[in-house]
Image 1 (cartoon, rainbow, N blue to C red):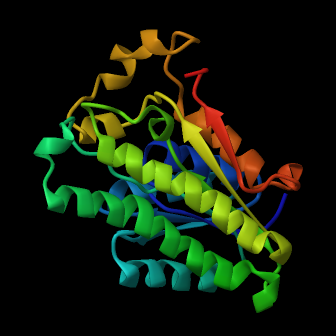
Image 2 (cartoon, one colour; image 1 turned 45 degrees about the vertical axis):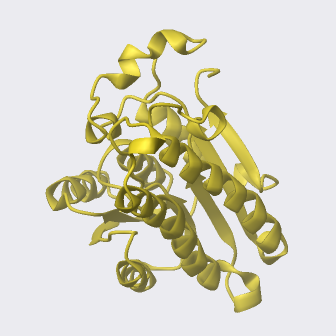
Length: 248
């Protein structure tokens, strides 16, 4: 499909890992951003290289502007940026709002919202035809939590994803005439490690009965939607939010 570069934040595990492998299979050079698990990131790179793809791993905490700048500098040295997948995100343990600390909320917003906006800023600088770029696509990872609100679980996480939805629509309109498409995916209950990081490793399967399709989704099912959205097959799709949630 292309030999352009795709930057995938949080690319060492879960949805990010699946998106990295799927993007490489379609011809993208992949920059795998990771926050701490270097071994997992390098394993993704190795798997891509075994299939004759090209990939590099770059350490990046998207809560840090300096890390984001370094990530995109590495991408510049790797090729011409054609896509960004804003996948990195965090979730906290289930808790009521009245018990949340300011530190928890600030970190949630720094990673899930500010990090996504700053990564998109750097992508637009490179891809916008207004800036001499050749266009491209930005896929933001939202969540059905943005619609459901996640009461008594993680309202702060839901609020952060609601912000991602608004940002997707606004930025999409802002750069639509500059060759850049901005879209989002709202995954439902997906079988990934993020639930364990929130203290409930079995959460997705425990709540599967609430999904109309009566099952959890897989990281590959989200990745398939991502690679379609960054491909030319989705050339008329922007400022759109796609639910990949089994109907939830």
